Length: 430
Image 1 (tube, rainbow, N blue to C red):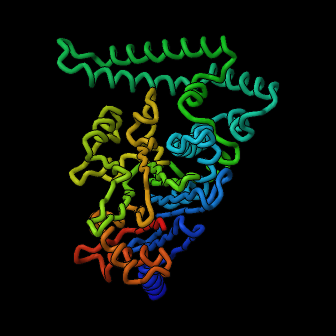
Image 2 (tube, rainbow, N blue to C red; image 1 turned 120 degrees about the vertical axis):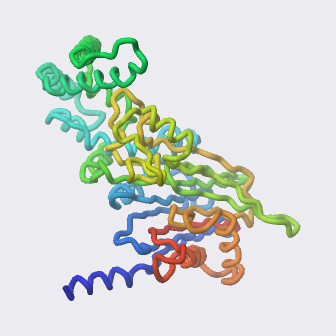
């Protein structure tokens, strides 16, 4: 008992341990700082990443910022923090200077890597995933042949289960039909639909020398995944574990103009505080929209997915558990057959927004919902600027982030103060 109490005490003492870092770009560009705290949660599930420069741009021309808010564990958030930046730089869209498209593709590729790692495979399909694109033609052909044989001899139970699902859906959607469908009719209709789909897809696959229908559907629905990413994704438990993801790319042109591109999926928030000329009030520009199950557009997609997990409770939580309606990972919410990623109960597709004409004196603030559940946008920005004035120009940006976290986290969970993990990142344009 004493050991258990000691462990609990140690965990509580670590509640307000704030860990942060700073990046200082060349003079006249940007300073980036971040800080994170576990709060009153037993685990730290947030993660973050930041860097100056990229494979194609020097530190004086580009910066990357990301905060990730994990749920049901930290694994997916940490996986994305390790790989989001490199995945972005490798996308075709980014390489042709479409930063927004690159961010969107990077989110989708990370989610696809997790989905592929957790999809049912036979041994040959696993080998193809591990080797990736570029395997010798004879090996690919052999894998297709083996997979085709596997499909043709597949489980009748899987077909029956699919038939029952389709039949049940038909029954639910029969609505005010004059004659409700009987159980036998439901099963027959469902079985016929599945059999027809199997026959059509198998015929098309055979004529093209393609993989079996399940593999073909996965390939069509998912972006290409780099082999190293696919291999590491296999060690990540992503069925329930997932993460909200918020990322920003800051670019400075040869003429000194600055553009900020932000991608968000989940409950994070990114705000740009524009410097006020002539002593006027600063202007806050929202560069992200939160994705929560209770929001009308999100709820509509959730209900249209027609999943047993589509229930949104009185607290606005999905299936009584999940506070965000878009996330990477959380694969149990992405199982509805025939739906694209953007149509699933939980979607990995981010919203992308762009702010141009960013100037010296502007401030970019990113945070997980541990910050925004405690502070309004206006108050957070006001406190950030006040803290900079108090600390002086030479203080690190991470000190401002730490001060915001301290405002959120109190000595207990009472008094309206936050108890969640909190991660804050700030970019100050000089």
